[in-house]
Length: 196
Image 1 (cartoon, rainbow, N blue to C red):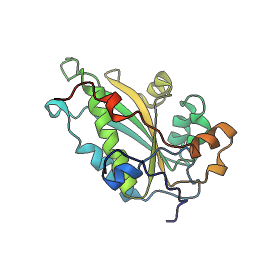
Image 2 (cartoon, rainbow, N blue to C red):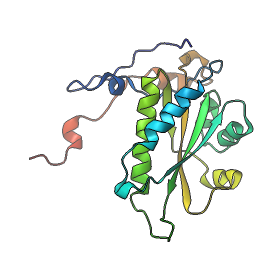
Image 3 (cartoon, rainbow, N blue to C red):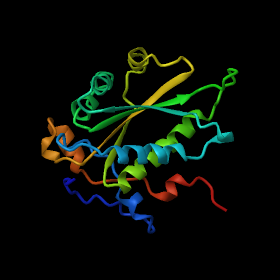
Image 4 (cartoon, rainbow, N blue to C red):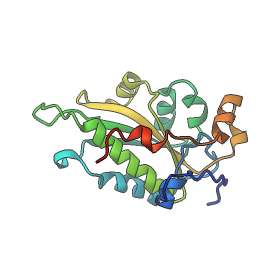
C-alpha cells in the first residue's frame, strides 16, 4: 500500500510521541486504496480498550467500506463540505454513545468516553499508516432512521478513515487551502487554567 506523503508534524512546546505529533486530519483520501481488514480491526480494538467511567464502555460503531450502500448512506447524512471529500474515504465509521444504562439511568459521561475511544481509534490508525478525520457535521436523525439506531443510542460523529490522498484531488479551492494550511494550536498556557 503506497500513500501520498505530507509532513505535517506538529511543532510542540516539548517532545511528544511521534505518532501523536504526526497525527492530523486530512480531507483528501486516495479513492483507489482500500484499507486492509486487519487495520480496521486494530483501530476498533484500540477503541474497545479505551478507558470508561465505571467500565461502562458506552461506545458503539457502524463501519462502512467505500463502495457499499452503507458508506453512501453515511455520506448522504454528512453536512456541508464533509459530503464533498468524505466520499473518497475508504471507511466511514459512525461513532455512537450509549446514553443510558439498561435500567434507564443516564450516563452523563458517555460522550466523553466515546471521545476517548475514538481518539485511540485515530491514534492506532495513524500508527498503522492511515489517516482519520472526525466530523461532527452529521444528520443525526437521518443516520438514526437509515440504520434503525435505538433511541438510547446517540450518533455523535463520523470518522473518515483511509490512505492519504493528494490535496490537488479536492474539488474546491477552500478545501485545498485548508489541506495545506499550517497546523496551529493555542499555546499551552492558554489551556491550563491552574497548575500548582
